[in-house]
Image (cartoon, rainbow, N blue to C red; front, side, top):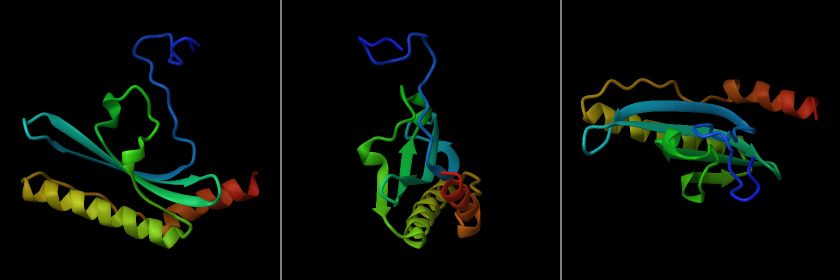
Length: 125
């Protein structure tokens, strides 16, 4: 890493920051001009036992996988609340894709999906 720019020295290599993500869904649609658009919704665990739900459009075009502040749609201490917010965001985006005539299938976020990862983190600290 180049200390002057704080970025990777190898062009085309993106820094990854996905530690703490417990579940993720990606939807593919088109933007206003007809170009492919990816929407990524995720649930992550942050320091202080905080659950966060994020939603980013075209994150693959960014220099880093780090979420931006405006990507966070929910922060709180209850997993159930995070699941609700993530599923609401997912449902909204699926509905928009379907209204645009795009096939959109995404399985909902579930406690069953997240708990094994949380237990692994808790017991392997």
